[in-house]
Image (cartoon, rainbow, N blue to C red; front, side, top):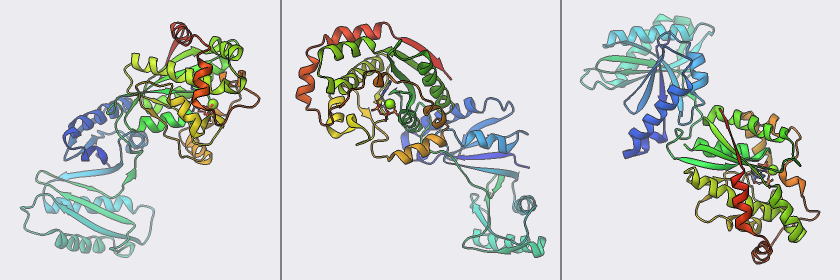
Length: 391
Ligand code: ATP
Ligand code: MG
């Protein structure tokens, strides 16, 4: 029955000058994600995007398309030739289809007259077509203006008519690539995959850095991170993961610095290393899964200490004000939760201090760091990193 899908892209349309760039990005992403449907044609028009189904199953296409970043809503629609009589017949046909399994359905007609030269005005048409539908489906329908079950929208255009009544919610956000690329510090935990998803939904491709302590941490924990990235890549496109061994650095810290600063100092090294990789890979920001107050290293003082290790890039923390419960809910929605909770050691747990500092003074941290050959340690860790690509 359906011939086209109307894709609305909300924010994208508001972007003024950038609109064309954004629309083109969205079309490119839709083409990529809907590649398996060989007969689709995708094009833009009137501030939205049209997908011509050419016989492909509309439900299958919608299922995929609604998860593409930048898609705000989707309406499956039919088309008719131009003219008022064709419009009426079209509405009747779609109404018949929508009534298949229901009795006494409430409806209203909303004609949008884009061809203003037409002599009849919209309210008259709504009334006229409403009467016609009541007559056609006698005991099965009644008119309800405020909150109808079916709001049949008909766009009367110069060359054709478009008719639809459903509006399916899309994932929203902005098309991938429209805001550049971010570098996420991806652990095997629950938070950082969710943070990655949220940032990517704002139109950023992802590059990832993962820190391990091999052979203290196993190959399994690296595989877990790759599995998480693979799930993320369904939404975010291909992800390159830079696997960095932190063991030498952790050993040095543990030998030379106060024990309670272990976590915070490791975290600072992570940020510095991630920033260098990010700049090398042309990323415009760093992303972490930190949330205020969640653990000892995520107090305001802790955040100051990690921020201070970064020189030029902004550090984005999309979960900063989220409760754990809400993070878990999102993790379940994007399918990363089950993988995140598989028990594997993390590089941070290998050298976990008995009593980590919760309010470490920056001065004290910087002083402790002076005991290390920071530059050499960072260079060495980056030199021997490995790259995995998923998605
Ligand atoms: P997550 O669930 O994301 O692991 P968390 O609650 O366990 O977070 P922390 O371990 O304090 O919190 O880590 C805070 C943030 O630091 C993480 O969200 C992540 O962005 C980064 N991070 C921590 N460990 C690693 C790691 N091994 N590799 C890469 N990034 C890490
Ligand atoms: Mg963690």
